[in-house]
Image (cartoon, rainbow, N blue to C red; front, side, top):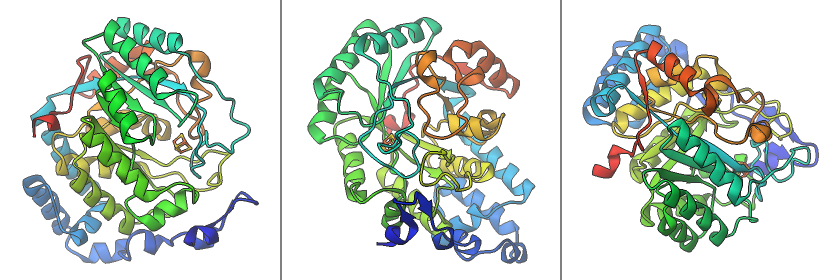
Length: 389
Ligand code: SF4
């Protein structure tokens, strides 16, 4: 397995020499080659994406390489126009409740992976989770995202009770789960309890790349099966991936977008990879701001009605990351509603922003930042218009 060469658990060490070179990362296309090409072709591919929502594999790779400021601005402008045609200038808000940082898995990139013995673990009980939702309701939120590591301490029934309670207290609200891989019956049960949406990033559509990011015990095939089950169970389903994860190249990104074309998710979570110091990828470079923005814009053009969050990771990578994400076509933000005492413990990556615009309690400040770039935060449930398809 390629992973065995890349990663030695014993030494907590990644062999940099085995990771793709810059040229490999860009699918063999260098900026010099791109400059030789007519930059007009990038404008053409953007127009084509707007008109037909797709481009060929090669054209997609050329778009990934776009770096000319005017081309990028053209791309972002088009993405804004498309999102405004469907969602106006609304930015949907979701109250994020990180209810447990225990996880049975060991993803190499994640700070709350099972083998991180330095993570300070916590889990919220039913009362605490419901209290967060009640507080969020008063603040105006009408979607609650219950996010956690795959923590077996919550049974099918106990999480079902939490969902029912939130939906009974706040029937006008949507509940989104972001709680990993379970079997079809469990997904179905939680949906019957009232969960409306489910986020499960596919992480990568390349099996080799998946094996580089995860230990053997995790299965690429099962991940996709779970996403299929979620759609079958009736959820508004979200997939997605990190930009700049170790081993990612334009050759792995292009299948990511093809996979999304095939899955037709209602939501896509795209955020930069950020290293966490207690993981095997601690010394890997963070994903790029520009690649993340480019991908958000490309996704908006490919899936005009999709819900696209400007993630906390983007806000962590750059002070204005969230605003930049919105200006590149994103239309969702997820301020943190978790009890303040646990926010720092949910450390998927280092330096996570937990205050200011990231805090649900400071939503007015967030609103003024959004207004400053021409957008209004909106407290509706904000269902995906892709449900109308
Ligand atoms: S990425 Fe998710 S499944 Fe993987 S270790 Fe982190 S919380 Fe667990």
